[in-house]
Image 1 (cartoon, rainbow, N blue to C red):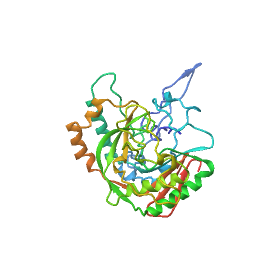
Image 2 (cartoon, rainbow, N blue to C red):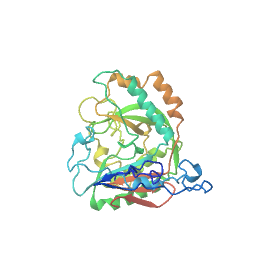
Image 3 (cartoon, rainbow, N blue to C red):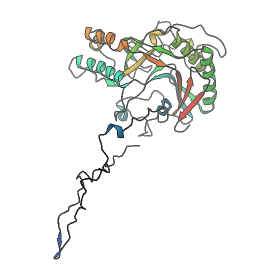
Image 4 (tube, one colour):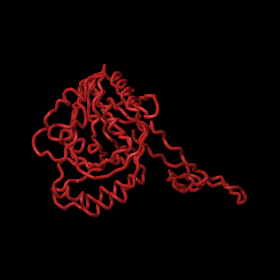
Length: 350
């Protein structure tokens, strides 16, 4: 819903009213000129001061749950049309009765952090060779209208649930997250790299993440993969025979990745306790994207001395705090607190 601009009520007082006060003559009659009432120089000023800081108290910040209420973009077509989305393609086609599902950790950068990330993206864009094959880097920090957007760390593949599976999946996911005993924790960034999505239809500029002190990311990923396995859904970041992490690819050139036994059966059978594997190198936060695989010049820029210094001195100093896991099922977002047993569901349709 677009915001509508209304003229300020003081505009009339400031001389911006466009009604003419000059006499107009029609068929020989003259309209009288209105006269302003006499003013009292000693009378107190009644006009509201626009720039008085005391008249503009700071508004309280929006609650974190507000951002979950309107998480779905406006649908502009009933079919998948990449031309409407900058060339992007849906990874999961829309089918009636299917619910696209994603488990993740969310981070809303502050204005200062967003400015720092924007500077990093601009540094890479301006340092690329200026030719027609140079990809235009599309930031993920703001909406087309300039509103700040959240960034995320994936804890699941893009999953598909049937309607009757929605509530059972959330209940089982919550149970496994509780069993992981993860409490709120903080993260820092360590690296910058290009990776593709599973379908290799887009490449993302991502920030690598340092392994947290109590291995919280691996524990939460394990919980999410266990919940997916109960429903026979694929797991995220399962190592295959080629030592390649499933769901994130950095070097494979041709063909599609071979499906592994874990991809077919999940991380483990329902109710079992799989071995916790270290997938720390796979966790990341995407900050920008391109449609085609970055060439060798773009890859080499990540090791440029100026970029490396910026990462160390600016991005490396950031610390993000995480206290909830989110599960988006369709357009409804469920919030699973890491320090609470409450699961709160938000969404336009509930």
